Every structure is written in structure tokens, then in C-alpha cells.
Amino acid sequence: MISISSRSKTSSKKLPLKSTTNLLLNMSKRKATATESEASKPKIASIFLKKEKPQITTDNGNQKNWKFLCWNVAGLRACVKKNDFSELLAEKPDIVFLGETKCKEWPPEVEEKFKDYTKTLVVSTEKNGGYAGVGMLSKTAPLKVEKGIGDPDFDSAGRLITAEFSQFYFMGAYVPNSGAKLVNLEKRGKWEKLLMTKIKEMTEKKPVIYGGDLNVAHNEIDLKNPESNRNKTAGFTDQERGWFSDMLSNGFIDSFRHLHPESKKYSFWSYLANSREKDVGWRLDYFVVSSRIMSNVKRSDIMSEVKGSDHAPIVMEIEF
Image 1: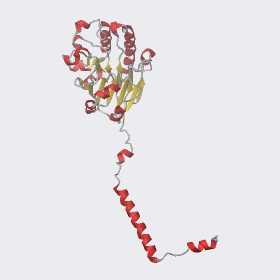
Image 2 (image 1 turned 30 degrees about the vertical axis):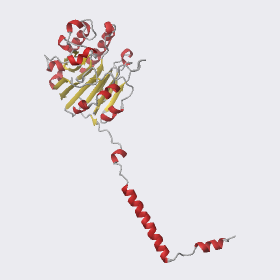
Image 3 (image 1 turned 135 degrees about the horizontal axis):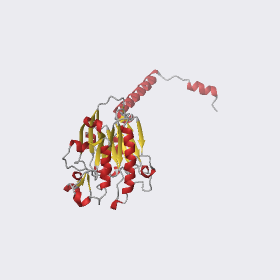
Image 4 (image 1 turned 90 degrees about the vertical axis):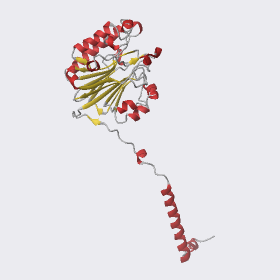
């Protein structure tokens, strides 16, 4: 057995000077090699390590120029597979309203492409959860956002977003369709009455910009075949057209028709019979504005070349 004292004595022996020098040199070489190895490793860009914060603008009431886009996407998840939204993003919109989204959350593609926008999604809570739904993206954070029209018959489908900004209210809607054989025409009338009450109250406080798929062709110029559709097809009944006229007579203006009184331009085409290729369409999508700001509207148009849905996006620019 080796005693404790003998162990201590053995461990305390000093190495020769030459051995110590060689040991230090070897340690130095290993350290240098390790450093070189680390240096040769590819650097990971900091942008992948640190997530950038969204660049959301605060509404201080000083923004002069606003650009709005509305698009019935007929199913957002399907739409993003057909269209990369490059045409929309090229417009550099301030507010984007999407109708008939049919989804319970924003698709990742939309989250990424519109990362610098606040997002509001109104989801259908009906049994058929893949129906209706609307969403709004805004570069400027709204002062307040309200979902729905105040009636469960409509709000369960997710049809309306109202956003308050310093200078105006924005209302984005996917208006109920009156249905095949006009079975929902009475229900549509209930919507129009609620909408009229709401929009009149708001315009007394601030100008209103009301946009989206309003599901009406107001005049004969607004559809390709007025005679064969009159009072037979949803969107071109005397009642629906009359409700739209009532809104205009209460201090509102159809911005596109005001700027383009003779234009036969459409925003919707059925998927049947190559309707889009033949331009057999309807103008169902609108920007309606309080009459006192119509002179501020610099552009109101239909982006008919943009594909991905049976509707085309509409765009409006306004300067306050």
C-alpha cells in the first residue's frame, strides 16, 4: 500500500525545463488550431438570429395620403397559392381589406408579406366555418376596431370591420348575397337597414370610407347583361339597387362611378363559360365615401388584371 505521504511526494516532482517548454508549445498550438477552426465556420447572419420588429405607424392625424385596397379573395388560403400578392404590395397600400377569407387564422404567406401591418381577422363561427369571414391589414394602427354590425344573424358569419382613424372611419364589408332564386332577399334588407343606421351615425362624427364586396350592380352600366338578370339574379333586383340609391341620397358617393361616369369596367366574373375571358362581368365591389370628402379622392379604380379570385381588387387613393 502506498502511503498518503508518498503520494504527495510523487506528485510534487518537478518536470525538466525542456519538457515544460514542449508542453506549453503543444498547448499553444492546440489553442491556435481551435481558434482557426472556429474562424473557418460560416457566420450566421444576425438577421436570422434576431427577429425584426414590425414597422407599424402611429396615427397622429398628420398623414395626408392614404391608399386603400379591397379584394374579395374567395378563400384566402386558396388565393395565396394562385397569387403572390406582388401586384397589391407594389401599390404600397395603407389599408387592405380582404373579403370572404374563409379561414380561422392568417396564412403564413400573408403574415410574412404584410409583416409591417396590424392585422384584424373576423372569423365565421357558423357550423360551416369555411364560409365568409373578413380581414383588415393596416400600416397605421387604428385608434379603435369594431367587429360586426351588431346582429348575431350576420356577425356569426364575419362580415364587417369598422376601424376608426384620426381623420375618418373605414368600414370593410362582405355584404350578404340575396341567394339563388332570391331566397335571402328579405334578410339582405335587414342588413341594409342596420348598415344605413350605422353609417349615418358615423358620418356625423367623421367622414366614412365604406369598401368591399357590396353585392349589388347599381345601374345597368354595372353589368354586362342587365336585361336577362333584372329581378331574377341576386345583385340586380329593384330592392337591392334601391337600397344602394338610398345610401347615396343620404350623403354618400360611389367614388368609381363619380370619376368614371361612362366606364364599363367590372370587378366580378363567374367561373362559368369563360366569363372573365369574355368580360361578361358585374361591378359588385365599391368604395363609397362621405360626399364631403369626394373632392379629396384622387383615384378609384378596378385592378382587373389581377388574378387569383373570381373578383378583382379595387383601389382608391385619397388626400386629406
